[in-house]
Length: 212
Image 1 (cartoon, rainbow, N blue to C red):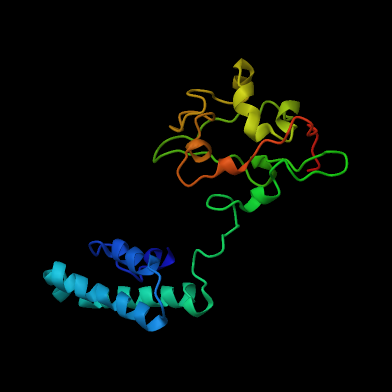
Image 2 (image 1 turned 180 degrees about the vertical axis):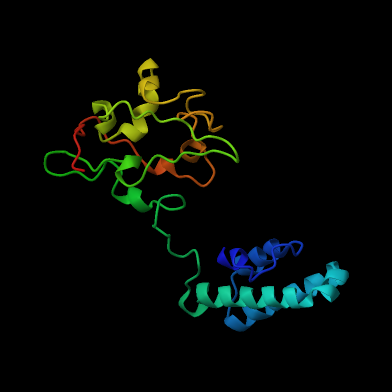
């Protein structure tokens, strides 16, 4: 959330994020009820952390004002519209997004599907911790193998894994999430918040060709 990143909410206030989530996820009947609930965050610090309340009241009040601004921009009870009413289809982590079309179900008259392949839109995500080298991706093979170009490769590559993969990729702990190799990619394989299950396999009559 940009309010934390920009320092508009003091991230070191105890439980400030918890308090913000609690008041902003609640549905209120009207704006006045919502603003009163948000203002109760001040009471929380007065009762639970009196020393912090006294020493850092300005930070607490600033956080409350930011929570109010967030509410005003994301909650519209008179329209029955809230921050989570409509999905954010930018990307594909929390809603179908790109996979609404890149799902191997959208076909032309020849049975050709839009590919569900990471590299159509971006590079394969590589993950490394501080002072760690990125997993190696060899550039010695100039052309993408034909198998990688079929419309269902993203769903099926795990079944095609064999020794030939190491010609281009490091393959330690394949399908893992520890980022020790290209094939143990936590950004691709981690389950939390990722909705690869939205990529559904089409029936066997889908052409292996692609239109993009």
